[in-house]
Image 1 (spheres, rainbow, N blue to C red):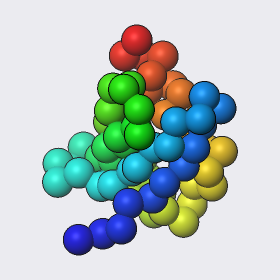
Image 2: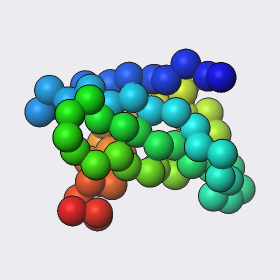
Image 3: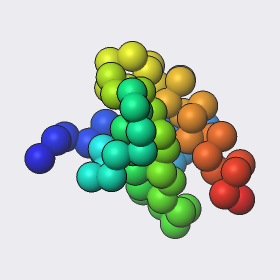
Image 4: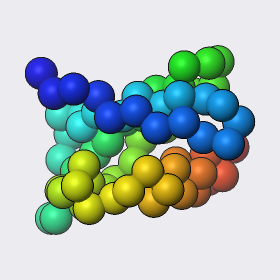
Length: 71
């Protein structure tokens, strides 16, 4: 099992992100990020190499966009 990647947002929430089993499409993977607090988990579609290609700021930006869409 892969080790979750953790990032902390401006609200102090620590998000733990792992690849989901579902495959959303060519060149992308489904990633589920679960917060440390009471916020809702978010599902993202990210590049296959998201662990190395996205820095923390880019991952947090993706999370922010997902939260805006779902909220």
